[in-house]
Length: 305
Image 1 (tube, one colour):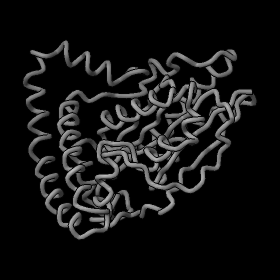
Image 2 (image 1 turned 45 degrees about the vertical axis):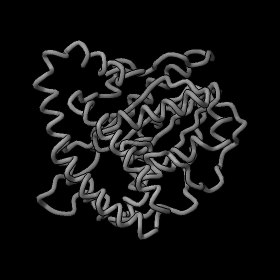
Image 3 (image 1 turned 90 degrees about the vertical axis):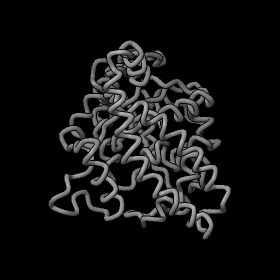
Protein backbone atom coordinates (compact mmCIF):
# COMPACT_ATOMS: atom_id res chain seq x y z
CA UNK A 1 0.00 0.00 0.00
CA UNK A 2 1.26 3.45 -0.96
CA UNK A 3 0.48 6.41 1.31
CA UNK A 4 -0.10 9.99 0.12
CA UNK A 5 -0.68 13.06 2.28
CA UNK A 6 -2.38 16.17 0.87
CA UNK A 7 -1.72 19.36 2.88
CA UNK A 8 -4.01 22.20 1.86
CA UNK A 9 -5.56 25.54 2.78
CA UNK A 10 -8.11 27.44 0.71
CA UNK A 11 -10.26 30.44 1.49
CA UNK A 12 -12.41 30.47 -1.64
CA UNK A 13 -12.57 26.70 -2.09
CA UNK A 14 -10.90 26.88 -5.50
CA UNK A 15 -7.61 25.36 -4.36
CA UNK A 16 -9.47 22.58 -2.55
CA UNK A 17 -11.31 21.77 -5.79
CA UNK A 18 -8.01 21.71 -7.64
CA UNK A 19 -6.54 19.34 -5.06
CA UNK A 20 -9.61 17.11 -5.29
CA UNK A 21 -9.33 17.00 -9.09
CA UNK A 22 -5.65 16.04 -8.93
CA UNK A 23 -6.25 13.44 -6.22
CA UNK A 24 -9.34 11.82 -7.73
CA UNK A 25 -7.35 9.20 -9.71
CA UNK A 26 -5.23 8.45 -6.63
CA UNK A 27 -8.29 7.85 -4.47
CA UNK A 28 -9.72 5.45 -7.03
CA UNK A 29 -6.71 3.13 -6.76
CA UNK A 30 -6.95 0.23 -4.31
CA UNK A 31 -3.20 0.32 -3.74
CA UNK A 32 -3.07 3.99 -2.71
CA UNK A 33 -4.34 5.52 0.53
CA UNK A 34 -4.81 9.31 0.51
CA UNK A 35 -4.98 11.38 3.70
CA UNK A 36 -6.01 15.04 3.71
CA UNK A 37 -4.68 17.60 6.17
CA UNK A 38 -6.62 20.88 6.12
CA UNK A 39 -4.64 23.68 7.72
CA UNK A 40 -6.73 25.77 10.12
CA UNK A 41 -5.38 29.05 11.50
CA UNK A 42 -6.02 29.49 15.23
CA UNK A 43 -7.50 32.88 14.32
CA UNK A 44 -9.36 32.32 11.04
CA UNK A 45 -8.66 34.67 8.16
CA UNK A 46 -11.85 36.32 6.89
CA UNK A 47 -13.32 35.85 3.44
CA UNK A 48 -14.20 38.09 1.82
CA UNK A 49 -11.35 40.18 3.14
CA UNK A 50 -11.77 43.65 4.64
CA UNK A 51 -9.63 45.90 2.46
CA UNK A 52 -7.20 47.12 5.10
CA UNK A 53 -7.37 43.81 6.96
CA UNK A 54 -5.80 42.01 4.02
CA UNK A 55 -2.87 44.40 3.89
CA UNK A 56 -2.31 44.23 7.65
CA UNK A 57 -0.94 40.68 7.23
CA UNK A 58 1.42 41.78 4.45
CA UNK A 59 4.61 42.03 6.57
CA UNK A 60 4.12 38.67 8.29
CA UNK A 61 3.36 37.01 4.95
CA UNK A 62 6.38 38.36 3.08
CA UNK A 63 8.77 37.83 6.00
CA UNK A 64 7.26 34.34 6.44
CA UNK A 65 6.57 34.74 10.14
CA UNK A 66 4.54 31.69 11.23
CA UNK A 67 1.16 32.24 12.86
CA UNK A 68 -0.56 29.81 15.26
CA UNK A 69 -2.46 26.90 13.71
CA UNK A 70 -5.03 24.65 15.31
CA UNK A 71 -3.56 21.25 16.24
CA UNK A 72 -2.68 19.34 13.07
CA UNK A 73 -4.91 16.31 12.57
CA UNK A 74 -2.16 14.03 11.32
CA UNK A 75 0.18 11.37 12.65
CA UNK A 76 3.48 13.19 12.20
CA UNK A 77 5.45 9.96 12.61
CA UNK A 78 3.65 8.17 9.77
CA UNK A 79 5.84 7.66 6.73
CA UNK A 80 4.28 8.87 3.49
CA UNK A 81 5.44 7.90 0.02
CA UNK A 82 4.38 11.31 -1.30
CA UNK A 83 3.21 14.64 0.12
CA UNK A 84 1.18 17.04 -2.02
CA UNK A 85 1.48 20.59 -0.69
CA UNK A 86 -1.33 22.76 -2.08
CA UNK A 87 -0.93 26.45 -1.36
CA UNK A 88 -2.11 29.91 -2.34
CA UNK A 89 0.17 32.83 -3.17
CA UNK A 90 -0.14 35.98 -1.04
CA UNK A 91 2.09 38.97 -1.80
CA UNK A 92 4.50 36.90 -3.93
CA UNK A 93 4.90 34.53 -0.97
CA UNK A 94 3.26 31.33 0.23
CA UNK A 95 0.11 31.98 2.25
CA UNK A 96 0.57 32.32 6.00
CA UNK A 97 -1.05 28.93 6.79
CA UNK A 98 1.41 27.23 4.42
CA UNK A 99 4.35 29.12 5.94
CA UNK A 100 3.15 28.23 9.43
CA UNK A 101 2.87 24.55 8.54
CA UNK A 102 6.39 24.48 7.09
CA UNK A 103 7.70 25.99 10.33
CA UNK A 104 5.95 23.41 12.52
CA UNK A 105 7.65 20.45 14.24
CA UNK A 106 5.10 18.16 12.56
CA UNK A 107 6.25 19.30 9.12
CA UNK A 108 9.85 18.67 10.11
CA UNK A 109 9.01 15.03 10.86
CA UNK A 110 6.59 14.49 7.98
CA UNK A 111 8.74 15.98 5.23
CA UNK A 112 12.24 14.79 6.10
CA UNK A 113 13.37 12.54 3.26
CA UNK A 114 9.89 12.65 1.68
CA UNK A 115 9.14 13.45 -1.99
CA UNK A 116 6.88 16.49 -2.36
CA UNK A 117 4.68 17.79 -5.15
CA UNK A 118 3.71 21.46 -4.82
CA UNK A 119 0.31 22.47 -6.17
CA UNK A 120 -0.41 26.16 -6.73
CA UNK A 121 -3.60 27.96 -7.72
CA UNK A 122 -3.11 31.71 -8.09
CA UNK A 123 -3.64 34.86 -10.15
CA UNK A 124 -0.49 34.77 -12.27
CA UNK A 125 2.64 35.46 -10.20
CA UNK A 126 4.04 32.43 -8.37
CA UNK A 127 7.78 32.26 -9.11
CA UNK A 128 9.07 34.00 -5.97
CA UNK A 129 6.60 32.17 -3.72
CA UNK A 130 7.80 28.86 -5.10
CA UNK A 131 11.42 29.85 -4.56
CA UNK A 132 10.64 30.48 -0.90
CA UNK A 133 8.84 27.16 -0.57
CA UNK A 134 11.73 25.36 -2.26
CA UNK A 135 14.13 26.88 0.27
CA UNK A 136 11.98 25.72 3.19
CA UNK A 137 11.54 22.23 1.75
CA UNK A 138 15.29 21.89 1.24
CA UNK A 139 15.92 23.00 4.84
CA UNK A 140 13.47 20.33 6.02
CA UNK A 141 15.22 17.63 4.01
CA UNK A 142 12.28 17.12 1.64
CA UNK A 143 12.69 16.31 -2.06
CA UNK A 144 10.69 18.47 -4.47
CA UNK A 145 9.90 16.17 -7.39
CA UNK A 146 7.15 18.09 -9.21
CA UNK A 147 5.33 21.42 -9.31
CA UNK A 148 1.86 22.11 -10.73
CA UNK A 149 0.58 25.64 -11.29
CA UNK A 150 -2.82 26.76 -12.55
CA UNK A 151 -3.50 30.48 -12.96
CA UNK A 152 -6.48 32.76 -13.56
CA UNK A 153 -8.02 32.42 -17.01
CA UNK A 154 -8.82 36.09 -17.61
CA UNK A 155 -5.20 37.17 -18.17
CA UNK A 156 -2.73 39.47 -16.43
CA UNK A 157 -4.39 42.82 -17.13
CA UNK A 158 -7.98 41.76 -16.42
CA UNK A 159 -7.08 39.78 -13.30
CA UNK A 160 -5.51 42.92 -11.82
CA UNK A 161 -9.10 44.05 -11.24
CA UNK A 162 -11.06 40.79 -11.22
CA UNK A 163 -9.03 38.95 -8.56
CA UNK A 164 -9.03 41.74 -5.93
CA UNK A 165 -12.78 42.18 -6.45
CA UNK A 166 -13.24 38.47 -5.73
CA UNK A 167 -11.14 38.81 -2.59
CA UNK A 168 -13.00 41.85 -1.29
CA UNK A 169 -16.57 40.94 -2.35
CA UNK A 170 -16.48 37.15 -2.13
CA UNK A 171 -17.89 36.85 -5.67
CA UNK A 172 -15.95 35.69 -8.71
CA UNK A 173 -17.93 37.96 -11.03
CA UNK A 174 -19.46 40.73 -8.93
CA UNK A 175 -20.26 42.95 -11.92
CA UNK A 176 -21.30 42.13 -15.48
CA UNK A 177 -18.47 44.21 -16.96
CA UNK A 178 -15.75 42.43 -14.96
CA UNK A 179 -14.30 39.13 -16.27
CA UNK A 180 -14.80 36.09 -14.08
CA UNK A 181 -11.89 35.66 -11.70
CA UNK A 182 -10.25 32.35 -11.02
CA UNK A 183 -9.03 29.26 -12.83
CA UNK A 184 -11.07 28.04 -15.79
CA UNK A 185 -13.41 25.18 -14.86
CA UNK A 186 -12.07 23.07 -17.74
CA UNK A 187 -8.54 23.51 -16.42
CA UNK A 188 -9.63 22.38 -12.98
CA UNK A 189 -11.21 19.25 -14.41
CA UNK A 190 -8.23 18.55 -16.67
CA UNK A 191 -5.88 18.65 -13.67
CA UNK A 192 -6.84 15.02 -13.01
CA UNK A 193 -4.18 14.10 -15.59
CA UNK A 194 -1.55 14.89 -12.98
CA UNK A 195 -3.15 12.46 -10.56
CA UNK A 196 -3.20 9.79 -13.26
CA UNK A 197 0.55 10.19 -13.77
CA UNK A 198 1.23 10.09 -10.03
CA UNK A 199 -0.87 6.95 -9.63
CA UNK A 200 0.98 5.17 -12.43
CA UNK A 201 4.33 5.98 -10.84
CA UNK A 202 3.25 5.06 -7.32
CA UNK A 203 1.92 1.68 -8.43
CA UNK A 204 4.77 0.89 -10.82
CA UNK A 205 6.98 -0.34 -7.97
CA UNK A 206 7.72 0.25 -4.30
CA UNK A 207 10.86 2.32 -4.87
CA UNK A 208 11.07 5.88 -3.49
CA UNK A 209 10.05 8.63 -5.91
CA UNK A 210 13.09 10.70 -6.77
CA UNK A 211 12.42 11.92 -10.32
CA UNK A 212 9.64 14.06 -11.85
CA UNK A 213 6.40 12.27 -12.67
CA UNK A 214 4.70 15.06 -14.61
CA UNK A 215 7.19 15.92 -17.36
CA UNK A 216 5.50 16.68 -20.68
CA UNK A 217 2.06 17.23 -19.12
CA UNK A 218 2.13 21.04 -19.07
CA UNK A 219 2.35 21.20 -15.30
CA UNK A 220 3.56 24.82 -15.37
CA UNK A 221 3.74 27.69 -17.80
CA UNK A 222 6.34 30.37 -17.11
CA UNK A 223 5.52 33.86 -18.41
CA UNK A 224 8.95 35.28 -19.15
CA UNK A 225 7.51 38.82 -19.17
CA UNK A 226 6.82 38.55 -15.44
CA UNK A 227 10.17 37.16 -14.24
CA UNK A 228 11.86 40.55 -13.82
CA UNK A 229 8.68 42.10 -12.41
CA UNK A 230 8.47 39.43 -9.73
CA UNK A 231 12.10 39.89 -8.73
CA UNK A 232 11.71 43.66 -8.44
CA UNK A 233 8.39 43.31 -6.63
CA UNK A 234 9.77 40.79 -4.17
CA UNK A 235 12.70 43.04 -3.23
CA UNK A 236 10.31 45.96 -2.76
CA UNK A 237 7.89 43.84 -0.71
CA UNK A 238 10.69 42.67 1.56
CA UNK A 239 11.87 46.23 2.23
CA UNK A 240 8.36 47.52 2.93
CA UNK A 241 7.55 44.50 5.11
CA UNK A 242 10.50 45.25 7.36
CA UNK A 243 9.52 48.90 7.61
CA UNK A 244 5.86 48.16 8.36
CA UNK A 245 6.72 45.43 10.83
CA UNK A 246 8.92 47.89 12.72
CA UNK A 247 5.97 50.30 13.04
CA UNK A 248 4.06 47.96 15.32
CA UNK A 249 1.74 44.93 15.49
CA UNK A 250 -0.97 44.17 12.93
CA UNK A 251 -3.75 46.21 14.52
CA UNK A 252 -1.66 49.22 15.58
CA UNK A 253 -2.51 52.69 14.29
CA UNK A 254 1.09 53.28 13.25
CA UNK A 255 1.06 50.23 10.99
CA UNK A 256 -2.34 51.26 9.63
CA UNK A 257 -0.98 54.68 8.68
CA UNK A 258 2.07 53.10 7.09
CA UNK A 259 -0.13 50.71 5.15
CA UNK A 260 -2.06 53.56 3.56
CA UNK A 261 1.22 54.94 2.22
CA UNK A 262 2.29 51.48 1.12
CA UNK A 263 -0.98 50.81 -0.75
CA UNK A 264 -0.53 54.01 -2.75
CA UNK A 265 3.03 52.96 -3.52
CA UNK A 266 1.88 49.45 -4.50
CA UNK A 267 -0.73 50.75 -6.94
CA UNK A 268 1.87 53.03 -8.53
CA UNK A 269 4.30 50.10 -8.72
CA UNK A 270 1.78 47.86 -10.47
CA UNK A 271 0.66 50.57 -12.88
CA UNK A 272 4.18 51.70 -13.80
CA UNK A 273 7.04 49.36 -12.95
CA UNK A 274 5.32 46.11 -13.93
CA UNK A 275 4.25 47.17 -17.46
CA UNK A 276 7.49 49.08 -18.07
CA UNK A 277 9.56 46.09 -16.97
CA UNK A 278 7.49 43.78 -19.17
CA UNK A 279 7.90 46.14 -22.15
CA UNK A 280 11.66 46.44 -21.65
CA UNK A 281 11.90 42.68 -21.32
CA UNK A 282 10.09 42.27 -24.63
CA UNK A 283 12.22 44.88 -26.41
CA UNK A 284 15.46 43.44 -25.09
CA UNK A 285 14.43 39.82 -25.53
CA UNK A 286 16.46 39.31 -28.74
CA UNK A 287 19.62 40.37 -26.90
CA UNK A 288 19.01 38.12 -23.91
CA UNK A 289 17.27 35.19 -25.56
CA UNK A 290 19.64 32.56 -24.17
CA UNK A 291 19.44 34.00 -20.64
CA UNK A 292 15.64 34.16 -20.77
CA UNK A 293 15.44 30.56 -21.88
CA UNK A 294 17.72 29.50 -19.01
CA UNK A 295 15.55 31.37 -16.53
CA UNK A 296 12.36 29.87 -17.95
CA UNK A 297 13.81 26.38 -17.77
CA UNK A 298 14.93 26.95 -14.17
CA UNK A 299 11.58 28.28 -12.93
CA UNK A 300 9.69 25.59 -14.84
CA UNK A 301 11.53 22.87 -12.94
CA UNK A 302 11.33 20.21 -11.84
CA UNK A 303 8.31 19.23 -13.98
CA UNK A 304 8.99 21.48 -16.96
CA UNK A 305 6.54 23.23 -19.24
